[in-house]
Image (cartoon, rainbow, N blue to C red; front, side, top):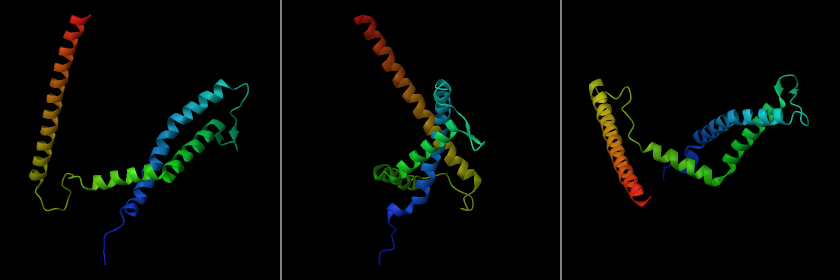
Length: 144
């Protein structure tokens, strides 16, 4: 019998947690937007406290954020994409963890080498972009 897990079910909890985090992050700007809309339309739509606890604008933003989370969970394309991201992240070679028996200096060596590769790549990319910028500026001065 095949003991591999169905990849669609492996990361369900992590995917839902991710979508809930997206909803929470969406709530912050939505609450400000709803407050400003209710403030702008204060003559037509009041912004009372519901049950004396939460303002109506905040409640609307919570409902909208919840709808975003439900929409993300129900959308099969978004779910599949996020699941594939988690599968690919599982393939990443992360820095070594505690309890692996590898000495500390070996772990830091790997981290230093990786950091050096990233810094060199950033510097090279900056040089290439600066070179392209200089060339394009020269041609723009010649043309105009």
